[in-house]
Length: 363
Image 1 (cartoon, one colour):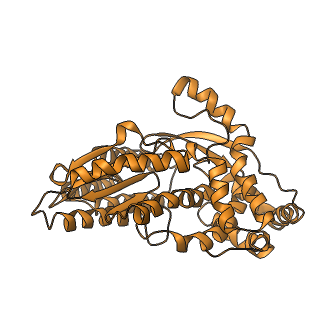
Image 2 (tube, helix red, strand yellow):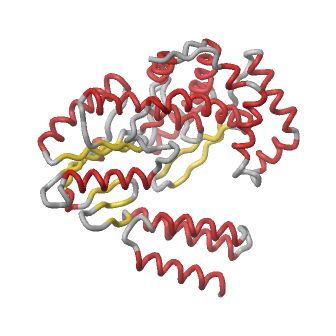
Image 3 (spheres, helix red, strand yellow):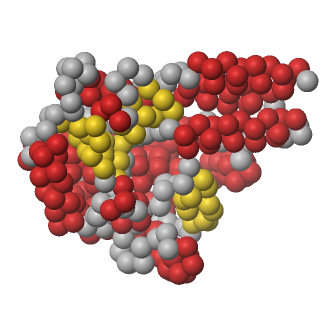
């Protein structure tokens, strides 16, 4: 296993920080906090650099807010200064760990993503069923409250195996533990009493809003990926963050596999599968993965995905009609939604949306 030393300068150098800033701000120019940071950009970047160089950097607090994506989620947003550091940290970690990831993990990776993951599962189903000439099954699982359940010590142990640079490790620990140090754990405890959405264990959890949480999630779940592919020698496997799918013509094989998967997650990563989101389904019943339902001869949008798209389009249209967003913003959103529809058999819905869009623009 390759060991990495002397990484700290690659993360904290002014060149790295300015490069991270350019990437970070590219799609956030109209955000007030980003605009304010840019007013004194050189001072702000060099101030961050001095704190990192002197090892006096401390991660700031988070601002929490709710989103529906489609299920309700609590996002925690760091201040701009910390998010610039997240970008340069992500860039360095990604170069180290990306080559170690299996080909069948699809979340937050270049040339991967939702649609590639869905296409992979569809191909595995076709291959295993011999083009639907024999029965095959899909085991689908979801890790319960994944981001809130990532164990800090387990994550740090994984990072320590490859990174032998104490300054870098200390910085990574500061980012990992910032979720707890900022009072977020207490916030989650208060919210869980009324909403029952979050774990109340300390020393756990990475915020969904952090870019670093995306690479931490892949590094963490890569342990599971390696176990599945090389420990259990599973042939047909795909994962997207905390959702994963295993395809086989043998239902009993999948049933016997499940406790081995649960044991590894529990013992090695301190994670649990959501008991209500474990299913073994026949291919012809439709396989639900990442917003699509895959059948032998066609693919549909999940009903919740369809409702969410229609709801979001109406909101965007209302904002446009009130003058809150420009036409090009509306057009970009519409093209994005049409792109989602293009990966399923949705001809009538697509044409209906195009007609409504034209009517809205010319009404």
